View 1 (cartoon, rainbow, N blue to C red):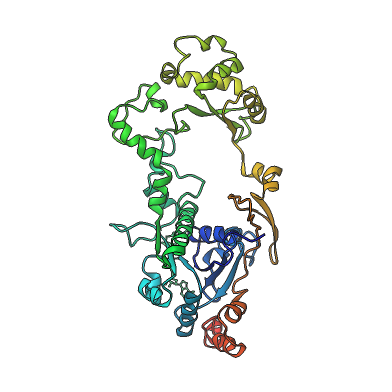
View 2: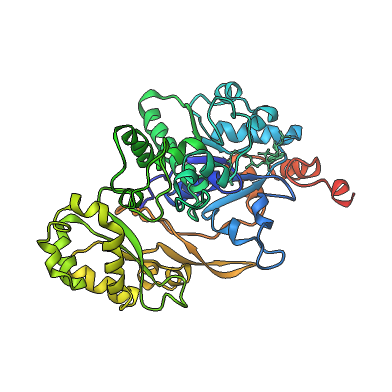
Length: 425
Ligand code: CAO
């Protein structure tokens, strides 16, 4: 069975997390992803957060599956020549360097178009054009500048960043969509184009409902936020809403049996209007079904703290899994708070390939998150990340047509390897 992106070749100039997330996804779908790394150094994450000395970190391996690695010194004249030959033969160039880095290498958009007018040139940057366009940006900077941090956390606490990497991986996902859209456009235009995603923009897109609330604020208080029921006035910007649900159906995280010792003995519970009567029966408050203070959603809004306190009395008598089982029978939307340990041990996630075990020559077996997007006709397999420069010769020879002598010469002049003299210094 063919993979969906078979035949697409990607010049992957990405590093750290945002860009590699994008190219890994495209590699899973079958694109031939050629990751360019600096000789002797490689993607900085190879050596970051290393759990086993001198072995590629999980940070790197979990973001670079299914890729090939070539080492090229882009600041070496011969190295730049190799890059230009790669530009001619690839369909997409993806990069997430600091603003201007690729231009400084000599690979401007104009030069790339000269070399290959069909090339799609995709970039992640921290910010779009504007006052911050030259800034370097990491995950949490994007979460803070994209509206996520100001709306995450509790009202009486500081802004919070989230564990999900919405700035890096979130932007990588947006970029991947931009790339396949541009590839589709190329099928009828015959031309490449630039695809850019700013991390601030991607986070803001993911925080879209909070921008919705910002505008609703001008027409009155946000009645589904807990602070409304608590009688606390709203300011002029969307406040942090703790664990309130972001939609019209009020929800909270509630304690379950064992919460005193287990930090994850909690469940998310949504008081969805159509199942309100079932909720009343389950928690032992059948009279709330008809009581004017509780029967209808608007009457409940000012009483959410009291209502959730009563529901929590019930959830605290059950483990999160027992509560889930009971509530599911009545279609009451809920979700246990699952720890990373529980997810790592979840057999159903392994069965679908969302979690995978991968074997690596120097690391041995490790667990990774696989491809969360399932295609029925072209499923993906997850293959280990490449060692630094593992495919340099293969790519020079088979993709670019260099002879064995030329490959040796490229090494000697420091285009693909650190020159012996430099290495010794
Ligand atoms: N050969 C020779 N030089 C190379 C090379 C190669 N193969 N690959 C990269 N380099 C050089 C670049 O040319 C650049 O050199 P100059 O600054 O002299 O032109 C240099 O390496 C470093 O690039 P950088 O500035 O991108 O790297 P950094 O570690 O200082 O910054 C980051 C990292 C992520 C802050 C920055 O790349 C950035 O802001 N990227 C865009 C936003 C982004 O993707 N952020 C998310 C990262 S994941 O958290």
